[in-house]
Image 1 (cartoon, rainbow, N blue to C red):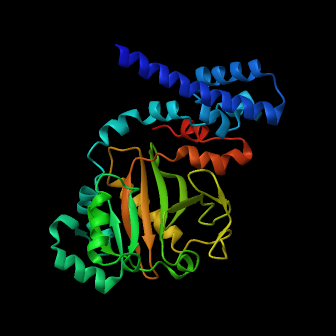
Image 2 (cartoon, helix red, strand yellow):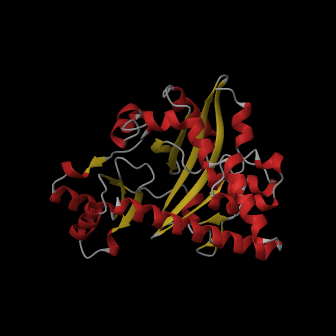
Length: 318
Protein backbone atom coordinates (compact mmCIF):
# COMPACT_ATOMS: atom_id res chain seq x y z
CA UNK A 1 0.00 0.00 0.00
CA UNK A 2 2.86 2.34 0.85
CA UNK A 3 4.41 1.78 -2.60
CA UNK A 4 1.03 2.41 -4.27
CA UNK A 5 0.63 5.77 -2.50
CA UNK A 6 4.22 6.73 -3.35
CA UNK A 7 3.64 5.88 -7.00
CA UNK A 8 0.43 7.94 -7.11
CA UNK A 9 2.09 10.84 -5.31
CA UNK A 10 5.05 10.81 -7.72
CA UNK A 11 2.60 10.80 -10.64
CA UNK A 12 0.72 13.73 -9.09
CA UNK A 13 3.97 15.70 -8.69
CA UNK A 14 4.91 14.98 -12.30
CA UNK A 15 1.53 16.21 -13.58
CA UNK A 16 1.63 19.24 -11.29
CA UNK A 17 5.07 20.20 -12.60
CA UNK A 18 3.90 19.76 -16.19
CA UNK A 19 0.77 21.82 -15.51
CA UNK A 20 2.80 24.60 -13.89
CA UNK A 21 5.15 24.72 -16.89
CA UNK A 22 2.24 24.96 -19.34
CA UNK A 23 0.43 27.58 -17.28
CA UNK A 24 3.61 29.66 -17.02
CA UNK A 25 4.18 29.39 -20.80
CA UNK A 26 0.60 30.37 -21.71
CA UNK A 27 0.58 33.23 -19.19
CA UNK A 28 3.75 34.66 -20.72
CA UNK A 29 2.47 34.40 -24.30
CA UNK A 30 -1.18 35.36 -23.78
CA UNK A 31 -1.19 37.37 -20.54
CA UNK A 32 -4.19 35.45 -19.12
CA UNK A 33 -4.96 34.86 -15.44
CA UNK A 34 -3.45 31.68 -14.04
CA UNK A 35 -6.78 30.35 -12.72
CA UNK A 36 -8.40 30.85 -16.15
CA UNK A 37 -5.67 28.78 -17.79
CA UNK A 38 -5.91 25.97 -15.21
CA UNK A 39 -9.69 25.76 -15.61
CA UNK A 40 -9.37 25.73 -19.40
CA UNK A 41 -6.80 22.90 -19.26
CA UNK A 42 -9.18 20.79 -17.17
CA UNK A 43 -12.14 21.68 -19.40
CA UNK A 44 -10.15 20.65 -22.50
CA UNK A 45 -9.32 17.33 -20.89
CA UNK A 46 -12.91 16.59 -19.90
CA UNK A 47 -14.52 17.66 -23.19
CA UNK A 48 -11.88 16.87 -25.83
CA UNK A 49 -9.67 14.33 -24.05
CA UNK A 50 -6.74 16.73 -24.41
CA UNK A 51 -3.75 16.05 -22.15
CA UNK A 52 -1.59 18.80 -20.60
CA UNK A 53 1.12 18.27 -23.24
CA UNK A 54 -1.42 18.29 -26.08
CA UNK A 55 -2.90 21.54 -24.75
CA UNK A 56 0.46 23.19 -25.40
CA UNK A 57 1.30 21.30 -28.62
CA UNK A 58 -2.05 22.09 -30.26
CA UNK A 59 -2.09 25.65 -28.83
CA UNK A 60 -5.58 25.10 -27.45
CA UNK A 61 -5.34 28.44 -25.68
CA UNK A 62 -5.59 30.08 -29.13
CA UNK A 63 -8.15 27.69 -30.67
CA UNK A 64 -11.93 28.15 -30.54
CA UNK A 65 -14.28 25.36 -29.46
CA UNK A 66 -15.31 24.34 -33.00
CA UNK A 67 -11.73 23.82 -34.11
CA UNK A 68 -10.75 22.20 -30.81
CA UNK A 69 -13.25 19.51 -31.67
CA UNK A 70 -11.24 18.60 -34.81
CA UNK A 71 -8.13 17.39 -32.95
CA UNK A 72 -7.31 13.70 -32.68
CA UNK A 73 -6.10 13.51 -29.09
CA UNK A 74 -4.61 10.42 -27.45
CA UNK A 75 -7.89 9.44 -25.78
CA UNK A 76 -9.85 9.86 -29.01
CA UNK A 77 -7.30 7.82 -30.94
CA UNK A 78 -7.55 5.04 -28.36
CA UNK A 79 -11.34 5.07 -28.56
CA UNK A 80 -11.21 4.85 -32.37
CA UNK A 81 -8.47 2.24 -32.64
CA UNK A 82 -8.35 0.57 -29.22
CA UNK A 83 -9.38 -2.79 -30.71
CA UNK A 84 -6.78 -2.35 -33.47
CA UNK A 85 -4.07 -1.90 -30.84
CA UNK A 86 -5.18 -5.02 -28.95
CA UNK A 87 -5.38 -7.13 -32.12
CA UNK A 88 -1.97 -5.93 -33.32
CA UNK A 89 -0.07 -7.77 -30.58
CA UNK A 90 2.33 -10.09 -32.37
CA UNK A 91 0.78 -9.36 -35.79
CA UNK A 92 3.32 -6.80 -36.97
CA UNK A 93 6.61 -8.49 -36.12
CA UNK A 94 9.20 -8.13 -38.87
CA UNK A 95 9.37 -11.90 -39.23
CA UNK A 96 5.66 -12.08 -40.10
CA UNK A 97 5.70 -9.00 -42.33
CA UNK A 98 8.75 -10.27 -44.21
CA UNK A 99 6.97 -13.58 -44.71
CA UNK A 100 3.65 -12.07 -45.91
CA UNK A 101 5.19 -9.39 -48.16
CA UNK A 102 8.39 -11.10 -49.22
CA UNK A 103 7.97 -10.09 -52.87
CA UNK A 104 8.07 -6.38 -51.92
CA UNK A 105 11.30 -6.50 -49.89
CA UNK A 106 13.57 -6.45 -52.97
CA UNK A 107 16.65 -7.38 -50.96
CA UNK A 108 18.28 -10.13 -48.91
CA UNK A 109 17.79 -9.97 -45.13
CA UNK A 110 19.54 -12.20 -42.60
CA UNK A 111 18.71 -13.08 -39.01
CA UNK A 112 21.72 -12.30 -36.83
CA UNK A 113 21.22 -15.40 -34.68
CA UNK A 114 21.57 -17.61 -37.79
CA UNK A 115 24.88 -16.06 -38.84
CA UNK A 116 28.23 -17.38 -37.68
CA UNK A 117 30.77 -14.72 -36.72
CA UNK A 118 32.79 -15.54 -39.84
CA UNK A 119 29.73 -14.98 -42.06
CA UNK A 120 29.02 -11.65 -40.37
CA UNK A 121 32.67 -10.61 -40.66
CA UNK A 122 32.69 -11.32 -44.41
CA UNK A 123 29.42 -9.38 -44.84
CA UNK A 124 30.75 -6.38 -42.90
CA UNK A 125 34.11 -6.32 -44.68
CA UNK A 126 32.49 -6.59 -48.11
CA UNK A 127 29.62 -4.12 -47.61
CA UNK A 128 31.22 -1.66 -45.12
CA UNK A 129 27.80 -0.25 -44.17
CA UNK A 130 25.05 -2.46 -42.73
CA UNK A 131 21.43 -1.83 -41.75
CA UNK A 132 20.07 -3.41 -38.57
CA UNK A 133 16.45 -3.79 -37.47
CA UNK A 134 14.40 -5.08 -34.55
CA UNK A 135 11.76 -7.79 -34.87
CA UNK A 136 9.07 -6.16 -32.70
CA UNK A 137 9.57 -2.43 -33.24
CA UNK A 138 9.00 -1.17 -36.78
CA UNK A 139 10.77 2.11 -36.00
CA UNK A 140 13.91 0.54 -34.55
CA UNK A 141 16.17 0.62 -37.61
CA UNK A 142 19.72 1.96 -37.85
CA UNK A 143 22.72 2.07 -40.16
CA UNK A 144 26.21 1.26 -38.85
CA UNK A 145 29.42 1.97 -40.74
CA UNK A 146 32.38 -0.34 -40.24
CA UNK A 147 34.70 2.69 -40.23
CA UNK A 148 33.18 3.68 -36.86
CA UNK A 149 34.32 0.43 -35.22
CA UNK A 150 37.70 -1.16 -34.51
CA UNK A 151 36.58 -4.39 -36.22
CA UNK A 152 33.43 -6.29 -37.32
CA UNK A 153 33.38 -7.94 -33.87
CA UNK A 154 32.73 -4.58 -32.18
CA UNK A 155 29.97 -3.77 -34.69
CA UNK A 156 28.27 -7.12 -34.06
CA UNK A 157 28.60 -6.68 -30.30
CA UNK A 158 26.88 -3.28 -30.42
CA UNK A 159 24.09 -4.64 -32.63
CA UNK A 160 23.39 -7.51 -30.22
CA UNK A 161 23.53 -5.29 -27.13
CA UNK A 162 21.12 -2.87 -28.82
CA UNK A 163 18.64 -5.70 -29.40
CA UNK A 164 18.78 -5.80 -33.20
CA UNK A 165 17.77 -9.13 -34.75
CA UNK A 166 18.10 -8.58 -38.52
CA UNK A 167 20.97 -7.37 -40.66
CA UNK A 168 21.28 -6.52 -44.33
CA UNK A 169 23.44 -4.58 -46.74
CA UNK A 170 22.83 -0.85 -46.57
CA UNK A 171 22.24 0.31 -50.12
CA UNK A 172 22.91 3.95 -50.81
CA UNK A 173 19.59 5.79 -51.17
CA UNK A 174 18.12 7.35 -54.25
CA UNK A 175 20.44 10.07 -55.56
CA UNK A 176 18.10 12.87 -54.42
CA UNK A 177 17.99 11.53 -50.86
CA UNK A 178 21.68 10.61 -50.96
CA UNK A 179 22.58 14.23 -51.60
CA UNK A 180 21.03 15.40 -48.32
CA UNK A 181 21.71 12.30 -46.19
CA UNK A 182 24.58 10.33 -47.79
CA UNK A 183 25.53 8.12 -44.84
CA UNK A 184 22.20 7.77 -43.06
CA UNK A 185 18.86 6.10 -43.59
CA UNK A 186 15.94 7.86 -45.31
CA UNK A 187 12.50 6.44 -44.51
CA UNK A 188 9.20 7.36 -46.12
CA UNK A 189 6.17 6.74 -43.92
CA UNK A 190 2.68 6.39 -45.42
CA UNK A 191 -0.41 5.87 -43.25
CA UNK A 192 -3.44 4.12 -44.73
CA UNK A 193 -6.98 4.05 -43.34
CA UNK A 194 -9.52 1.43 -44.34
CA UNK A 195 -12.95 3.07 -44.76
CA UNK A 196 -16.32 1.90 -46.03
CA UNK A 197 -15.37 3.08 -49.53
CA UNK A 198 -11.80 1.76 -49.79
CA UNK A 199 -8.31 2.75 -48.64
CA UNK A 200 -7.52 6.40 -47.84
CA UNK A 201 -4.17 8.05 -47.14
CA UNK A 202 -4.17 9.85 -43.77
CA UNK A 203 -0.58 11.09 -43.62
CA UNK A 204 2.88 10.73 -45.14
CA UNK A 205 6.26 11.86 -43.86
CA UNK A 206 10.00 11.71 -44.49
CA UNK A 207 12.34 10.58 -41.69
CA UNK A 208 16.10 11.07 -41.85
CA UNK A 209 18.42 9.13 -39.54
CA UNK A 210 22.06 10.13 -39.29
CA UNK A 211 24.41 9.14 -36.47
CA UNK A 212 22.30 9.41 -33.28
CA UNK A 213 19.85 11.97 -34.65
CA UNK A 214 16.41 11.41 -36.16
CA UNK A 215 14.51 14.27 -37.79
CA UNK A 216 11.17 14.15 -39.54
CA UNK A 217 8.74 16.26 -41.54
CA UNK A 218 5.23 15.79 -42.87
CA UNK A 219 5.08 15.56 -46.66
CA UNK A 220 2.76 17.76 -48.67
CA UNK A 221 1.86 15.69 -51.76
CA UNK A 222 5.34 14.17 -51.73
CA UNK A 223 7.20 17.44 -51.13
CA UNK A 224 9.02 18.68 -48.02
CA UNK A 225 7.14 21.93 -47.47
CA UNK A 226 7.57 22.15 -43.69
CA UNK A 227 10.75 22.22 -41.56
CA UNK A 228 12.07 19.02 -40.02
CA UNK A 229 11.80 18.48 -36.25
CA UNK A 230 13.72 16.20 -33.88
CA UNK A 231 12.32 14.60 -30.72
CA UNK A 232 12.90 17.83 -28.78
CA UNK A 233 11.18 19.97 -31.44
CA UNK A 234 14.42 21.56 -32.61
CA UNK A 235 13.92 22.90 -36.14
CA UNK A 236 16.07 21.81 -39.11
CA UNK A 237 15.91 23.49 -42.50
CA UNK A 238 19.24 22.11 -43.78
CA UNK A 239 21.84 19.41 -43.11
CA UNK A 240 25.27 18.99 -44.68
CA UNK A 241 24.78 22.51 -46.13
CA UNK A 242 21.88 21.19 -48.19
CA UNK A 243 18.40 22.69 -47.92
CA UNK A 244 15.70 20.34 -46.63
CA UNK A 245 12.83 22.35 -48.07
CA UNK A 246 11.04 21.75 -51.39
CA UNK A 247 12.50 18.27 -51.94
CA UNK A 248 10.31 16.15 -54.22
CA UNK A 249 10.35 12.51 -53.08
CA UNK A 250 11.02 10.17 -56.04
CA UNK A 251 8.45 7.43 -56.76
CA UNK A 252 6.07 8.98 -54.23
CA UNK A 253 2.92 8.12 -56.18
CA UNK A 254 4.19 4.56 -56.65
CA UNK A 255 4.62 4.24 -52.87
CA UNK A 256 1.08 5.54 -52.34
CA UNK A 257 -0.30 2.90 -54.72
CA UNK A 258 1.80 0.17 -53.16
CA UNK A 259 0.75 1.06 -49.60
CA UNK A 260 -2.92 0.92 -50.63
CA UNK A 261 -2.37 -2.44 -52.28
CA UNK A 262 -0.64 -3.83 -49.19
CA UNK A 263 -3.36 -2.42 -46.90
CA UNK A 264 -5.97 -4.40 -48.82
CA UNK A 265 -4.17 -7.58 -47.76
CA UNK A 266 -4.34 -6.66 -44.03
CA UNK A 267 -8.13 -6.55 -43.80
CA UNK A 268 -8.48 -6.84 -40.01
CA UNK A 269 -6.70 -3.53 -39.34
CA UNK A 270 -8.21 -0.13 -40.10
CA UNK A 271 -5.13 2.05 -39.76
CA UNK A 272 -1.58 1.00 -40.70
CA UNK A 273 1.72 2.83 -41.06
CA UNK A 274 3.95 1.58 -43.90
CA UNK A 275 7.69 2.29 -43.93
CA UNK A 276 9.61 2.40 -47.22
CA UNK A 277 13.04 3.31 -48.47
CA UNK A 278 14.26 3.41 -52.04
CA UNK A 279 17.36 3.36 -54.20
CA UNK A 280 17.58 4.61 -57.78
CA UNK A 281 15.78 1.56 -59.13
CA UNK A 282 13.19 0.23 -56.70
CA UNK A 283 11.05 0.70 -53.61
CA UNK A 284 11.88 -1.43 -50.57
CA UNK A 285 9.43 -2.24 -47.76
CA UNK A 286 11.07 -1.83 -44.33
CA UNK A 287 8.12 -2.69 -42.11
CA UNK A 288 4.62 -1.75 -40.99
CA UNK A 289 2.55 -1.44 -37.84
CA UNK A 290 0.23 0.73 -35.79
CA UNK A 291 0.58 4.49 -36.26
CA UNK A 292 1.66 6.42 -33.17
CA UNK A 293 2.70 9.71 -34.77
CA UNK A 294 -0.69 11.37 -35.28
CA UNK A 295 0.17 14.16 -32.83
CA UNK A 296 3.29 15.02 -34.82
CA UNK A 297 1.24 15.11 -38.03
CA UNK A 298 -1.13 17.67 -36.53
CA UNK A 299 1.71 19.65 -34.98
CA UNK A 300 3.15 20.57 -38.36
CA UNK A 301 0.42 20.75 -40.98
CA UNK A 302 -2.89 21.12 -39.26
CA UNK A 303 -1.71 23.47 -36.54
CA UNK A 304 -0.96 26.06 -39.24
CA UNK A 305 -4.67 26.19 -40.07
CA UNK A 306 -5.80 25.46 -36.50
CA UNK A 307 -7.49 22.24 -37.60
CA UNK A 308 -6.75 18.69 -36.53
CA UNK A 309 -7.24 15.16 -37.84
CA UNK A 310 -10.39 14.21 -35.98
CA UNK A 311 -12.70 15.89 -38.47
CA UNK A 312 -11.17 13.69 -41.16
CA UNK A 313 -11.85 10.51 -39.21
CA UNK A 314 -15.38 11.60 -38.30
CA UNK A 315 -16.31 12.07 -41.96
CA UNK A 316 -14.94 8.62 -42.87
CA UNK A 317 -17.47 6.00 -41.77
CA UNK A 318 -15.63 2.79 -41.04
